[in-house]
Image 1: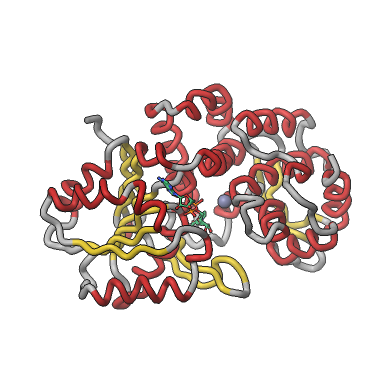
Image 2 (image 1 turned 30 degrees about the vertical axis):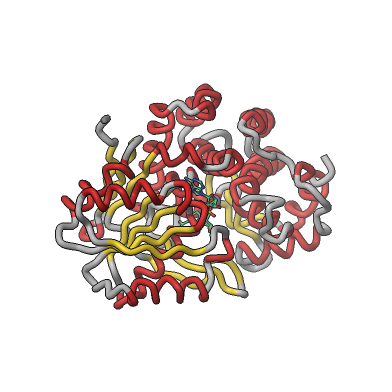
Length: 371
Ligand SMILES: NC(=O)c1ccc[n+]([C@@H]2O[C@H](COP(=O)([O-])OP(=O)(O)OC[C@H]3O[C@@H](n4cnc5c(N)ncnc54)[C@H](O)[C@@H]3O)[C@@H](O)[C@H]2O)c1
Ligand SMILES: [Zn+2]
């Protein structure tokens, strides 16, 4: 057994630890019994994770003599709904869990967001632990306290800031994650390097093949560096009024493409971010802000990871540029005719630009969509 790496999130009375290691699910019983004595646990998970990882968690809780119930929802983004929220809250209340008991969110970002939000509203706020099992959840969504579900009006429009009491990122859980999901999470990893950490970006370029081949030590270092980065942004700006927006690098283009493909299997979120990051670098170069060779370099790296990098990599036809522009305008509020974008001066040098002319974006998309 190796000791987990700990990243501490020092948010005053809402402070918590992120533990990262290869066998944390098997040790969860001991860890939870020690940190939360006398509590009961409501596990929330999805059908795919229930098959792949739930038995490990249940065995560990049983071995430590902890009382627990499980609520399972279908896997997939559609579970971030009022209906599934209702089912989860009902399951927690039906099991007579008290306010002092804990919700365990076992799964990817969908489960983290849904279970975290359920915890925030059940009995006016239950504590919860994130046990992220997808790469995206381990490096991004499980840290920072954003929870919520989708509305017919848009994604993540119903939610709350609710910080977890602990995050257990088990690296062995990634072994059952579908490769396409792993690659999509990797796009968010690369994002941290591109935002403000050039050495991390170069480290990733060098180690990407070994990381994808399953090297646990490198994966652990990668997850820890991402959690430390996310923690820095959360501390600087817990409620996302300023610098936390840098985490949206590649996301304005990405969200527009996700919307254009109906949030379907045609394009996973991380895949949209991969294309979006290449576009953000290309657009910055076109505006004369960044070296023109960066986007090609980033593209080669993401391609090696099995990610799409161009709009033309998306299967099927994309809607007209006007429709993509509408999606961009909706994603980033238009202030007096100008758009806000995360632009860059080069790898590791991104910044928030609140004064981007929609016409410049439109002509850039026109020129990029066919290549
Ligand atoms: N709260 C935040 O700060 C934040 C940040 C980024 C993204 N998000 C949200 O996260 C969600 C996306 O998260 P995601 O990419 O993890 O998607 P997800 O939760 O849907 O997981 C992807 C797929 O992988 C499966 N899976 C997860 N772990 C597995 C494992 N170990 N073995 C086998 N299968 C496994 C899931 O069942 C699912 O089918 C979106 O809803 C997004 O809005 C939230
Ligand atoms: Zn993202």
